[in-house]
Image 1 (cartoon, rainbow, N blue to C red):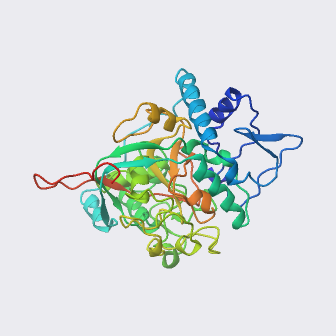
Image 2: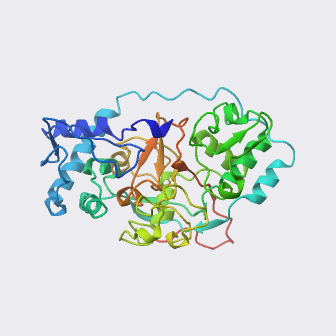
Image 3: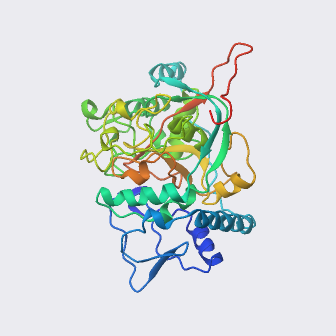
Length: 400
């Protein structure tokens, strides 16, 4: 189960960067566990990041220690790592072992009728990723909320680079438990095991304690429908998320699309602006100790109207994950990036009910293997833009 182990983010790239700079990087944790868990203490070691030393277990370095010089060094190091890593083979996970379970006649239209509302997102050029200056400020902000963060956790979100996306649509709300259970029931008994391209769609309560999906051998349900129906679906695999979106005629958003929807034309750091506001997100600062209904926290809505892109659950997106992918894109930009062609983990976005401000930022990246599940991971779907009348522009101008 995803929540039971550490998921590393870019450790190979980070280690290589350190070697290139003549540094030693040790003990760089990145997990889907709770953000405010103290950083593990590494005995008799000095943790170094881009020439900024800090004894293991000590507070993170101050924001004013980061300069444009370090940012340039970081970008150059990542580019070198990228060149070296391109010759390193990436092992893909097992291929799907079968076809999706056929949907009964008429079921797809019923699923589509219950699907969440889509809102249009205007395409254009935006700045994807972040800078050391912003990341260091986010690390410092952790201390304000009683936790310790590590600047290394932000390394895979750099360098910031311009990205072009076409206009598209994204769901206002995260997919609910009720919607996903309907999907499983339409596919039929035991579909949670192999019904999503031959892969597991989700874990049930009989298999994973944190799941609230029930299965009696014939029908799927919820452990408490009155309470859980409108909560976001969790304990769902990437395969399950993708299959649900396809069943309603949609798809998972790409990582670039997800970030565009959350940041908007102003390149916000949080969906609502540039400053964290604990009242706007279901996070570790909310005291909820779990997910809230998908329609709650309307105050979290981003520039285009999507709710809960910060907090509640982290969200699967379409892309494979690589820690150095942003460096590749900075050197070889492409429109509508789709992520690496293969990999072993899929990207997660958005932070969750058990994470703090650093992880709720619109630029933050995490990852997990596509067959893993977690009580803090769900998803939302996207779709291509609706056809426009002839002569209507489909994308905003640059920086719009």
